[in-house]
Amino acid sequence: MLFNSYAFILIFLPLVAAVYFLLHTYLNARWARLFLLVASLAFMSYWNIYFALVLICSVLFNYAFGITLSTFAKKDKSETRKKIILAAAITANILFLGFFKYYNFFVENINAAFSTNIGALQILLPLGISFYTFMQIAWLTDIYRHGGYRYDFFHYCLYVTFFPYVVSGPIPYHTEIIPQIQSEQAGRFNLANLCRGMFIFSIGLFKKTVIADTLAIIANGGYDTAATLTFIEAWLTSLSFSMQIYFDFSGYTDMAIGVALIFNIHLPINFNSPFKALNIVDFWRRWHLTLTRFLRDYLYIPLGGSRKGGIRTNLNIMVTFLVVGFWHGASWLFLFWGFIHGAVSIFYRYWRLLGIRMHKALAWFLFFNFFNTSAIFFRANTWHDAMKVLKGMFGLNGILISEKLADSPFWQKMTSFGIQFGGWRENLPQVDLHNYFLCIALIFVVLFTKNSNELLRDFSPNRKNALAVGVMMVLGLLLLNQASTFLYFNF
Image (tube, rainbow, N blue to C red):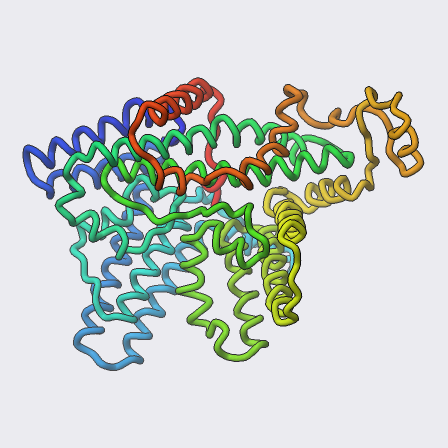
């Protein structure tokens, strides 16, 4: 069930919220939370009952390991034994995730490398498995580190399966969610939180249906359909995807935050104007923050972080970014995308040591173009598709501009530099002209306007905001007939 669907917006969400608060009011918190747990599993089952079963198995397995580890942490002072239990639990989680997500990838590459004929399996990737696996690894590691966090199974299960974030994040820590679930305030209907939740939900819906899905038409046409791309076509394709993925995923996150707020649960911030970043470190402090902090807290720092010398630091950075890339999907393109970000992070580490200050405008321009170019490998389905876009961006397939400019003396002179007159978008979908300039206009929007977090922070229930919510909801609902799944559902 998509957040951007009539079934969710008009039926599931209002029904679940109403029953939850009624049960809290007329029965007790236990019944209300039990209903919320059932509703969350029903939400997952709506996609496929198999997804819900895999989720339940993961929860049961990790809870059993968590209780065992917690018991040993209290009774046994042997670090070796605790390490063995934690290592076994994390290994099992990685194998569990790896089987569903990476088995066929490894089989294909083993067959190609050693001329074997190992059969691939028809494996359906469970929705959200990358997200709830990381959540539970964090919980197990915290038990090992701190020797506590023995929640009862009911609240732990609700934490992992809570429907606003179980499918595509954010990736909240148990310490952020379970105390909220257990609090008395969680079950009390809060009109202020309802208003704030609907406000940011409507922003997310608008981002997804009005902006991301519009840009997807151009991006998909350039990457998946076009046989070749000229200079302008390639840049429009790459910029459209860069803006699409930002507004698609940040839109989903806004909607998740809004839905959770309706139930009085505050989720962590996941985006903080990443396209305002001036360098790669700044970017990863703004983009997909809950994934970044997980990898920092549970991979980069345990590997040694920056505490064991320059070479080890560089290795830790590269390993972390390779994991980032591979986490997104079983593809050499994702690995290469992670490698690029790792390499640039290492380069930037040495650049800072030089103490050279760059003008902010130039720093932004260079980094944004790096992100936009590296995103080609994130989006492309094949190396051929990636090279197709890159060749076009470097003008290797020609530079065409509108024939309407043919009478201009300036552009006539530019023909000596290889510029030609013709159909500058003939290889892309024939949509309204203004759609092609949306990806460019959005650069100024993300640079010079407040982000969703700032808008929510400054929100107050008044006529102006009520009108804004109404307009965004109406536009979002009107476009639901062409709604698509969120990009991060694939990860």
